[in-house]
Length: 369
Image 1 (cartoon, one colour):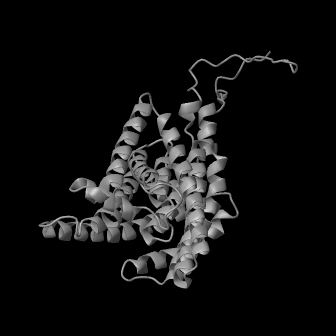
Image 2 (cartoon, helix red, strand yellow):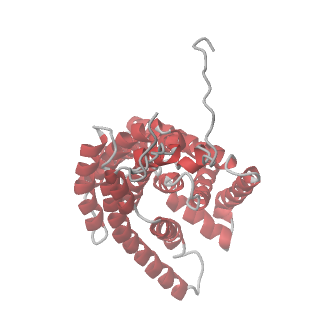
Image 3 (cartoon, rainbow, N blue to C red):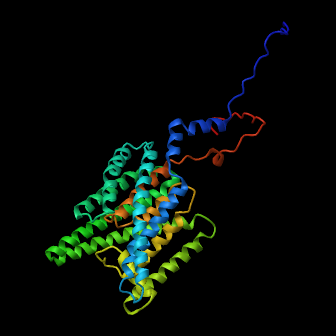
């Protein structure tokens, strides 16, 4: 054999690419990284969720309950009304901007149904929600808002169910969307029966409202089950939240013959619950209402899986009141957050170990093994 020439270039050794590099390149393409930059930050979602909780408790609950409850609280009533109005307006502005950002980020979804429905719903529903913040809308516009928000909810269910880490958000979103549609149908029938004084038709509306409440309770129970499996002592936290909800439900039942905070709690819960009254006691409805708000306040803070906590929180706050503009906005936020959670990439460092410096030996595996 001839010896290598001293002036000849030394042969270069080409190393094989590592497994982790291949995974990262396949996981985050150019369009995927651009979509990740458009996603709202966690602080933005927490801010929208905080003002959603504040607008729900103050605007829909406490503000209608304080007038006439006791004497000498005129300044408190005025302050609560101003804070409720500001929180509602702030939620409309921030929620609409967050909807647009979530829409742009979730257009990478492979579902052919989701993209056209999401674009049409956001383009049509957001102007209706923004206009509702300055004047009262006609019932036809509220019915249109119910149809638009539930359409986005149903279109977002399948993409959320396809990913394992967002499946809980998809199931809760399906229950909340069905409950919103059923409850809105019950209110429309009840309104028609009240105008035409038809008692049998009003009973039918109460039966439909009962079905909506059952769907609502199933969604809340599913979120409680999901929360109880997050960490070690989560079951105790769920039990504590249920005890607090039971205390407020008891205060709401005793509101007719009570004074002080129990009277205010009862009137606030009566304002929060949807009408017409279903064929279920008021105590159960009050418990579901308070338990849903408490669960939404807790699940909003969960960081992983990303987007699931926000989807569950907004879904619990929207629930069966899709004809309320703010609730319709929160249902849209829940739907888009669920799709965002399904698009969240799984980091290879959490599933594949980092290869060591020593190259692993190859093993020939028989076909029958």
